[in-house]
Image 1 (cartoon, rainbow, N blue to C red):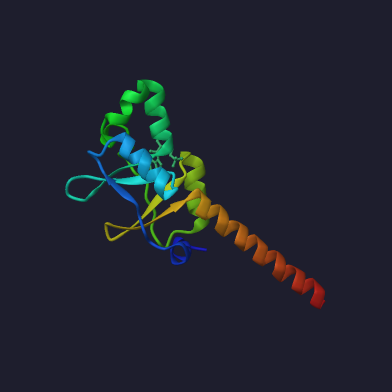
Image 2 (cartoon, rainbow, N blue to C red):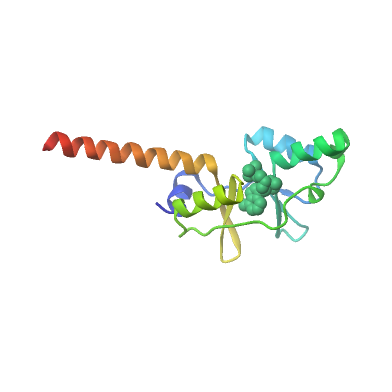
Length: 143
Ligand code: AMP
């Protein structure tokens, strides 16, 4: 199974926010869209970083509610690990486990074409396992 198979099913929409938006705006966006991370773009629309709910929790624990009025750019992760559509879901799972994050943007020809969350990976793996079990049951029943 490859990343492109997941994107085909879930779609290619990527929710983004500008780096000068406030942390409060980012929290509202995550809540309204029911997502755990948002891609941050700079003034030129280029990928500037990623901000997840963990970054917001960390900011509030360190700086209290004052952090909510400050810019997303102060709290985002700038070094973003990305993947390609041809990458395998197994490799993506390994990357998420090793680096301890739950979101990976998909980039092709320097363009953002989707985002995969750990929820998407788990869903795909469960579907695969259920399919394999059904095939095995049919095989045994036929024998
Ligand atoms: P998450 O588990 O995705 O909520 O993110 C945990 C931490 O890793 C946060 O500080 C995020 O900003 C950061 N993070 C999330 N996804 C990525 C990624 N693809 N590349 C680099 N850092 C990330």
